[in-house]
Structures are given as structure tokens and as C-alpha cells.
Length: 279
Ligand SMILES: [Zn+2]
Image 1: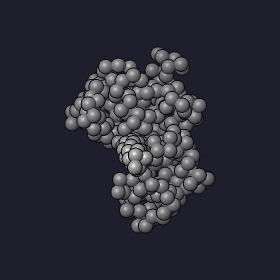
Image 2 (image 1 turned 90 degrees about the horizontal axis):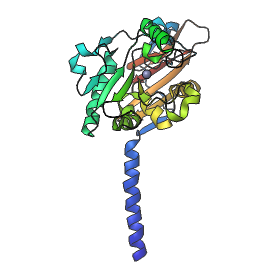
Image 3 (image 1 turned 30 degrees about the vertical axis):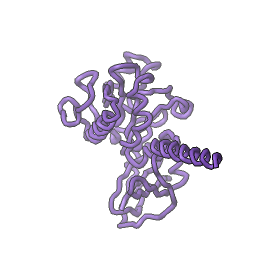
Image 4 (image 1 turned 120 degrees about the horizontal axis):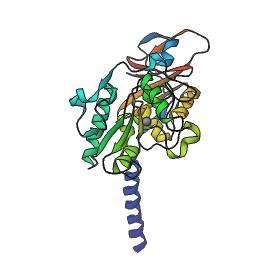
């Protein structure tokens, strides 16, 4: 009888911890299910260089077309500026990203993590080249080779501590994927990203991509390779089904592809285009 009691207690503990563990992870289900297509579109080669999934690194610089068109000066948009501070009044970012960031910061506040500060956002190519000249190659990237030139990356700090020690940093590492963000340069991935651990640099990629990358522990480089290899996956996340397809351009200038009713297109900034659709 005693044994059964212990087993019961153990069972309850496993359930409790299992639940806790599960709660921190995206509940995603990846399969090969085919989408219900609503029609066809033609994607052009130019699309390779535009969108939220672009890879920007030392081999793949930002193209003019890749710079976000909805860049705003945050201080002039108080509606997106609740619950955090700015290092300087000139900080700009894509409006879509500002809106997601604001939602994320509000969610963190509910967990009593509320000392966020944006230290850097969008940098134009001219600003990046000025920074490179001032800081040198050890501390800055040349113009076009920084994600900040896209307008969808943020350097986020805490007003209390250094980001690696701050609750703000820990919270973002665990939760930012829920809002479409990724920690772009993780500690154990510098051999892949080519950049040292940057606990402050977060990059917007959008859902469901951030959830897949978080669950599978993939950097953007690895995620693009994964999609390229799979060519097509479907993802069930939060009652929504997403269909993700990768199209490699091998010399063609355009491609006719099937799409679902709602879809988004992004290039990889290398050779392909990723179409993310929902019904
Ligand atoms: Zn940065």
C-alpha cells in the first residue's frame, strides 16, 4: 500500500513538472500535410532580397530592396512606446516590429519584468559606415552587413543590470519567440553565426518561424537550411495551421507557385523564397 502511495506521488510530480516544462516550449506540431491551395502567384527573383526571414551576415549583405519601408521614429509614435525607455531619441524601427515589441514588453510586465530599454534599432547604410569608421572592425560591421540595416533587429537592454545578468534578458531568451522574435546570436552558436554571444540582440522573424526555431534550437542560418532541405512543411501552432514552402531559384527569373488564401513571402537573401500560408 505504501509503495502505491509513493508511486502515486511520483506520478503527480512527473505530471506537474512535465506540465511546467511543456509550458515553456512552443506547442507546435510539424508534419508534411499538404495545403488547400486557393490559387497561383508568380514570384520574382527580386523577392529573394526582401522580407522578414532574410539572412544578413558576412556573406549576405542587405540589398537596397531589403530595407524595411515602414521605419518609424519611436518617439513620434507614443502608442508603440509604452513600458520601455529609449537610449536616445533618434531610435527608429519597422512599425510592425515596434508593435510586436510593445506587445511583448506588456506581457513581460505581467511577469514583473519591466525595465526594458532599446539601445539600438534601425541604422541606415550611411550610419552603419560611420559607426564602422568610428568603432573599427572589432566592434562594428561594415555597411550592409549588419542586421540593423534591415530595420527589424533591436539591441535591448535593462535599466538595472547588464543584459546577461538582468531578468529582462532571461525573460526574453525564454519568451520572445511567442512574439515572433529570436535571440539572433546565442551563446553556443557563434561558430554558425560568426558572431559572439549577444544577449541583447533580438531579431524579428515572425510566427510561426520563431516558434519552430526555438523548439528546434536553430539559428536563422540553420532554419533556412532546414526549410531548403524539407522544401515544404506544415505547422500546427495555437489553433492555426501554417504551410511553409521553400522555392530555390536556380537561374530562373520567376516562378509560378501555389498559395493558400492568406500568405506572406520572404526571401532568404541567398537563393530562395519562403512562402508562409494560412487558410
Ligand atoms: Zn545588435
